[in-house]
Length: 268
Image (cartoon, rainbow, N blue to C red; front, side):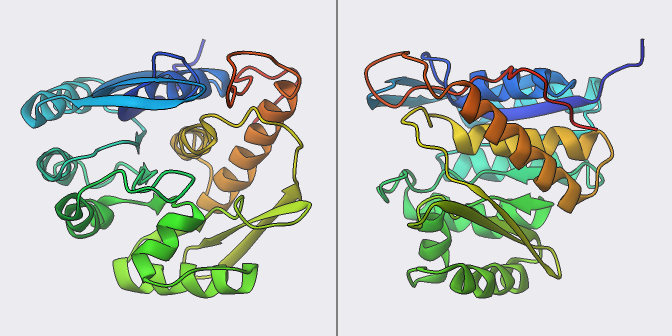
């Protein structure tokens, strides 16, 4: 049997299993990768929301990361919740030693409702220290608007924003349009040129962990040798299958999780 692509996820833990490290590991495994994990934070959350976050010491986060990078030599890295400037700077130092490993960053700066999840110094460190090491950054609409200082209301504005962010930070950006109104969802990738990805909106409340799932899927597919546009296209297709398969699930009393092992999905 061929050795699977090793994917390192660096993120927080979600005890309900729908988001964070737990969602990442399921996604990587579902797509045929081997998941390694470095924990940045322990959260207290369920389908109804997050009630507490305890970040690990930055040296411990870096030590976990170095242990995997130095021994397992992952084919790609996904980064989720980082939270603090010291954690971000230490992670950047780790990644600096591995410049050829593609990094996908889900910035986790703002909640889906637009509530800040990082202090201002952490946001500055994210932009100045971590973005330069990334192959792709995947902000939601609120996060992209926050980075640019102006709201985004249309796919056309998203295209302009993605190009501006690419020019500003020198890495590809995937702007996720799930917060826009309409019966279709359009995501915009800019990697030097515009790529549009549109799919029908699935009517369900089970959407906990979609950002984690998509970024992990893209990282896995990059690690398996796909181009960035291919990885985004296939990653979105996988996520749509995971949402559809869990549409009628009743797990928890809030926003439920996805089905990370949907039937009949192939990434080829």
